[in-house]
Amino acid sequence: MKKIILGDRIVKSFGEGDEQRNVLDEVSVEINEGEFVAVMGPSGSGKSTLMFALSGMDRVNGGKVVFNGKDLSEVGENELSDLRRTKMGFVFQQPTMLKNLNILDNIILPSMRDNRKNVATILEEAGALMKRVGIAELEKRDITQVSGGQLQRAGICRALLNKPKIIFGDEPTGALNSQTSQEIMDIFSEINAEGTAIMLVTHDVKVAARTERILFMRDGKIVSELKLPKFNEIDMEGRIEKVMVKMRGIGI
Ligand SMILES: Nc1ncnc2c1ncn2[C@@H]1O[C@H](COP(=O)(O)OP(=O)(O)OP(=O)(O)O)[C@@H](O)[C@H]1O
Image (cartoon, rainbow, N blue to C red; front, side, top):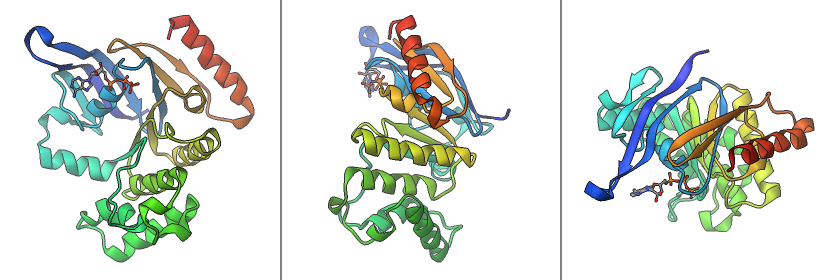
């Protein structure tokens, strides 16, 4: 299977001198095209730092990250931000949206920077995505006039608009109730079924149990992983149980 990301003995450290600490300690990881991966682990174990390193949001101090065949250490800032905008999508716990723009304008804003696309196409694609995730009627609303779940749906539309090869999600359901969280996960499952790779950082066993592979981190290392079959709602309880057993086994 073709790799979309290769992380090879990545080191990321913060602090200087005696205070310097490796938050990622020679982490090696591969993500295949179209894969659905979760990263779990205790608070401070390095999950978000790993995601930032693999997505080129942050430079690493050692090892290398190869994204879509490109060694990110050899890529300049402009090309890197181009790569992020055209090949990656990001969904965070709280979508960062501009207060003076409505939902639709927030969704299309990053794509408008891409000169290769015309505005009519962007609007058409944004409209189709909003319809698909159930927020078509909210396009003119202010971001303060929608629920957390609706805002997250808008965040997903924004992330999908450039047809990324991979979506990175840092606790994308962390601020949502259990029902809304499952609805958002349904959307991620659909997106993944269409071939987009997804990597989610999560503390939620129910979220992780819907993915195909879970990486468990502790103290800046991937200490274990669990593979699961393709998601099927019927097996949900069994999947959750498998994750819990694994977590107990490795003491997380
Ligand atoms: N910019 C930074 N400067 C200094 N230390 C940092 C910085 N970013 C992260 N850290 C430290 O790196 C460690 C790992 O942080 P990270 O956010 O990756 O953990 P996490 O596993 O995602 O945690 P959580 O589950 O709480 O979000 C933490 O000890 C954190 O304090």
